[in-house]
Length: 162
View 1: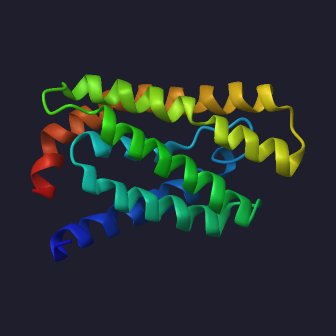
View 2 (view 1 turned 90 degrees about the vertical axis):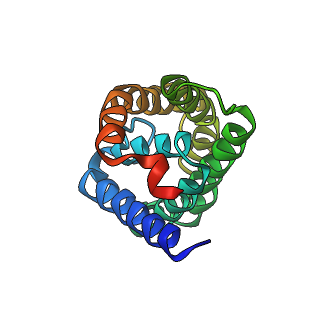
């Protein structure tokens, strides 16, 4: 990986951690709206953004989560699995909005892993945890899609990683 890509991914990781920290009160638990998850859309522009987001997830969960190692495994695992699925689903001619909707769908469905974590660690009802965590993920990713699209026009996410 080039120095440029490493620097960009470091910035993405720092942004993820900062957003999670600022909004920590609503970033964890069965009912969560993790604003930093909007950065998941970056992989729709270039697959190498996944490294910054993954690092951000790991560091944010390490610093802010009360579930300790469980959140490092399940939270990081959910993000990694989602990115691997998206790499297989994305096609070169997919539109920007199609990629964003695929990202929202995949990340929403893989919240099943977070629900399993909450069931195991906190003894929360599985289906309640899945529905509420998936709902929060879907809301964040759908609502942030137009913002990310607008930011792309200004920043040019794909070109930054080229």
